[in-house]
Amino acid sequence: LAKTTQPISMDSYEGQEVNITCSHNNIATNDYITWYQQFPSQGPRFIIQGYKTKVTNEVASLFIPADRKSSTLSLPRVSLSDTAVYYCLVGDGTGGFKTIFGAGTRLFVKA
Amino acid sequence: DTGVSQDPRHKITKRGQNVTFRCDPISEHNRLYWYRQTLGQGPEFLTYFQNEAQLEKSRLLSDRFSAERPKGSFSTLEIQRTEQGDSAMYLCASSPLGGDGMNTEAFFGQGTRLTVV
Image 1 (cartoon, chains in turn cyan, purple):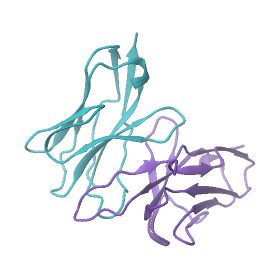
Image 2: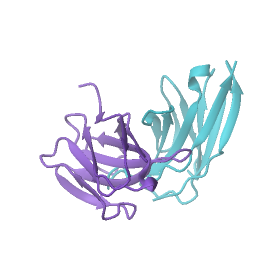
Image 3: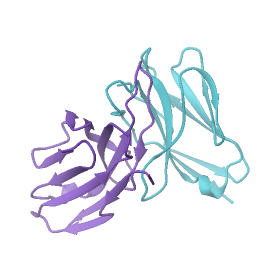
Image 4: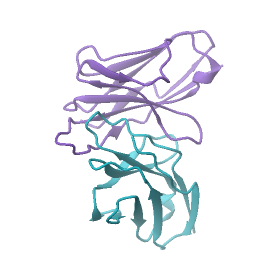
């Protein structure tokens, strides 16, 4: 399973765009990149998943360069409620969701 | 179906006691996972089931831990002779069976917070 590296913490202000970058140098051909969000005392919640290029949904965008050795989660116009831990995960899912979570990035959004 | 349900939400037990947690996955999901999460860390994989078969166990899962999913629906995680180091949030997740190398989303419950005193 590919290991990921992401910043330990980030600060932002309400209304700003936040970009969190994750490194996954050992990503395998069949691996997908998935981002989860976790609030205190809750289980992680799926945000977005992609394989290459760009994926966008109603809450975020995911940018993946051609070499797929990194990815960037983009949160447009964050609000206070986006304060959470964000995890970047890499895996192919064929053996079940055993992906290594890592410590994640703690995003703190200030007013 | 309202998602993955875990019971209890909180459990305080004395060291040496046995505890059992229950997880009810989303009904059509074949796969069920257990994770442990300590403060400031991401979830650590413990074990997973595909239907009733336990397909993999992490080396984090000592002999004091046992998990079952007898009918391929709900699952239980039992910890025997609890130790203070077992204090953590225990998370359950479920996912549908993915194919063709496609990653699948896992849906997490709210967890059971265990405190061993």
